[in-house]
Image 1 (cartoon, helix red, strand yellow):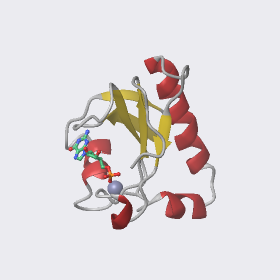
Image 2: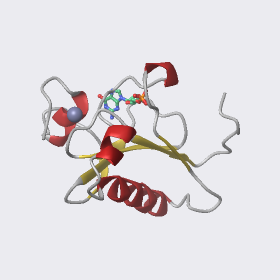
Image 3: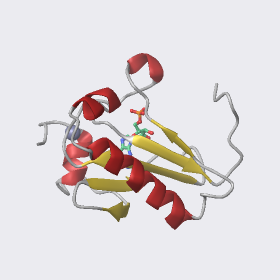
Image 4: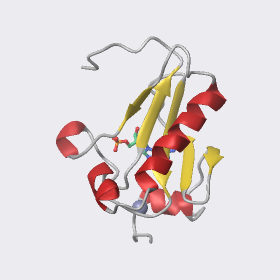
Length: 116
Ligand code: 5GP
Ligand code: ZN
């Protein structure tokens, strides 16, 4: 399932280039073009859902797989210790700008909490 004019669907289709760091049959992880931390990777399902809630509501284990992929990326990047942040901005007021669900895997520096 893909959606016309969706930037991340175009990355899945190799129509827009991306630095891919990890891939499974149903998920893809690639570096954010504007990194906010030494590790800043976006993890997406290859199928199109507008946000995390829509993905979870589809109820077929794909949300689980996205989170497992995020952890595999963190392992590969060596940031499981001391820890990493996994963020799903949901809605424009929270800063979501691309409406193809994506988890931000952030780490490699001290991460303040609350994030501000
Ligand atoms: P959001 O603000 O929707 O949570 O996150 C969207 C993210 O996508 C931003 O961090 C932004 O830097 C990243 N981004 C936007 N356009 C591109 C692109 O063409 N390639 C990659 N790799 N990341 C992008
Ligand atoms: Zn999409």
